[in-house]
Image (tube, rainbow, N blue to C red; front, side, top):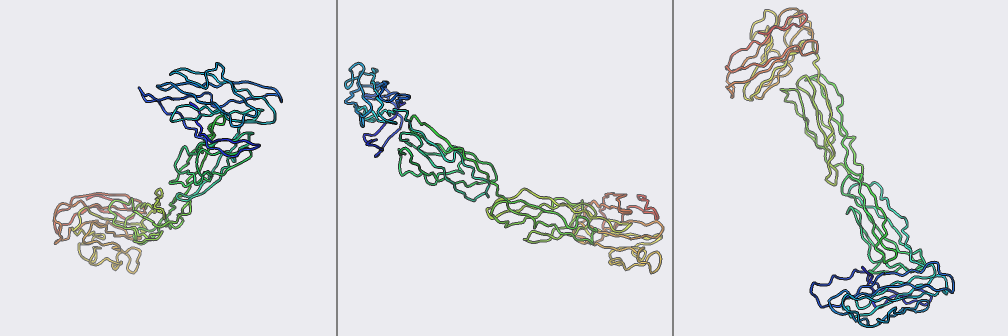
Length: 483
């Protein structure tokens, strides 16, 4: 590899006037081609620790690497003030056969602090008619400093943009030639303004240029890249690490208030109004879903578009709702779950539900020695709202109440007594005649005593108008005897 220079470069007269360096690599010679191709190596000669008035000589080699002879027409220096060249074997200028090489000696004589020049080799290489070798003497060399040496863009919201500046400073005694600037790594980092109108570009000693960078994270993640500065030898490649974090994004926070309620009569609120976005976006959508409920429940979350949803349970047990929030950038949060527990509020609590809709199942509770479809039987016709008077006359605590009644769906239905009078109570299910659905239907009955589930059974009820006796419950104590 070698540096390739245009024919107009450094003009030094006490300082840098201008430059136009093309530091591309030599193109490959086509197989079987008839082109003259030049190679010059090394790219740079540096004369360090030369005392004032003393001289030192170094060599670069010119090679013919193409398919035809290389005609070297001339070797020149930009200034020739402190540097002088000689052909070691007298071949150059002249012809180099294919595969032949010749050495050029460049002697530096120090006369001041810091001197530099360029040796040009002109040839019939059509692609590279003039190739240069940089010459640095008197302890002078180009040096590139990046300030700051790295950039941490910090943590910002996804979709937001932050910018930063890294300065390229020529801190050596010779010019720095910048061939290109690029980003190597995550594409969330970009160069907004390189500070140069074209490449190659030159920074004179003491000169600086600002590179404007931007960072815009696309998601909640950590991003890394490098600002890559491709400079001519002997500086080479200089990099500045770039880091940033996409910290934005919606966070769903949720809970049930209260977290425990009375079954059927109690109401809770699933709340999500503490949800937020860690960036600058706003929460635009609250999506609530009831993801679990006791078997047989038909309870639904209240409709709405805001952060909160009211809820009324219809069976004893736990109900879990899930919240996902979405921000104005279309990003969705991780799910948040909240649970409410529904508890029985009476000592004697009976639940009933079934599988197939369109089949009207009715829950019946007969008091001790009671008969069906009389005042001794609590069912849909006479027991809604606790209108029956059982046990001690005038004492409401021992009266039954049908709190839930369902006709066309799958239940549930509920009968309860706060403090039952002593005796044997019979739990039955009537397959009410005239229903749309007349096939097999599995009916489940749950019996709670003192707030605890003491008995549950599922039976096939499939005869219109029939009664299925499930169990007797003996009070006091609440012992259950299956029937």
